[in-house]
Image (cartoon, rainbow, N blue to C red; front, top):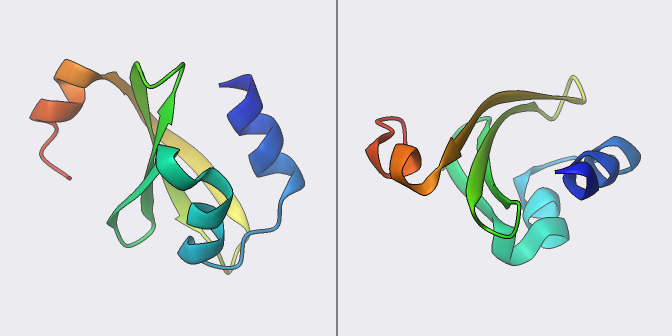
Length: 74
């Protein structure tokens, strides 16, 4: 989680493709402005709301695998 935070704070992402290129296998697009990241060795999912124009990323949820599988927004 700390690694994710440091990368997000120091990188200026212009779009989802840049975000995906940075995080590669640990990132998925879910819906517009909603991005999902594998964190803590893939044991949890971090859902972030991303505004590329406004240059903001807000953590919406952190879920384990079971919670993520039941999550209705994916």
